[in-house]
Length: 301
Image (tube, rainbow, N blue to C red; front, side):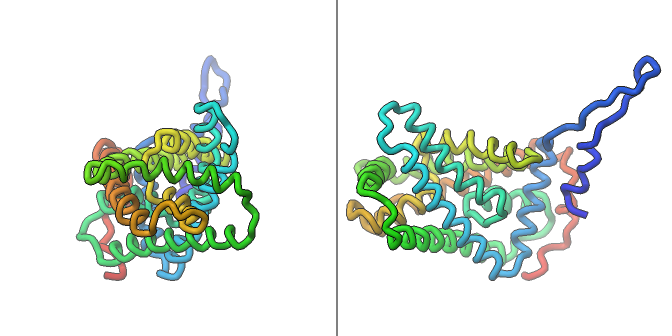
């Protein structure tokens, strides 16, 4: 029986006796925090136990959704002068990519930064080398998936010169830290912490919801915030940078990777693993009814 089925009873109407009459009480329409953290751990374990081919294909898929989200975020905001509306539309565009990731079960590096630590914090035993392998394959798969879709979009010739102009502005916004030297590198790291804190909360809200509408709305709010704040989210930047590599000569591949993606990824690990997974796992430790802590370890060590 799935975890969704385990909670069916909570969705059914509850009957209460009052003054000799039965009163119907609607069931709760969302998971409580301890259930969400428990669900994170279950999802992390499920991802980890998939065959490698499935893990890598789902990582490619998640990366491709990042490029679609990046392209959509730019297209929606082209020509918009009012900053607030500009950020809102751009965030809504990127939320489409994240919604596809969360709902499809694709493997996104920055979501894994929340799911796997939730699994590890609530189980006994040491980390398996398969965890490192999975983390690395998800990262590489996301990059390759993002670039593959960028190539397909480039080959399609579908985008106008207006898109290229707007993309250049996005790239300058993302890469502005280059002017600050090593200070800029650490600024990106801190920005990455904030970004994955927000994406972790997007996963939190999405997991809390029990219907598609709730999951999409739960995804939208934190994504709009991190896009508007220009917080450095490595998976999102993979989408922007893949298009930038093909359509612009403003920056080189090593500037994209070493001077942005690397510090952003380190920050993303901290933000997702500590500020979401560890924080809530510790806060709701007594309430979590997970079986993960009774596991005898991973199957494939």
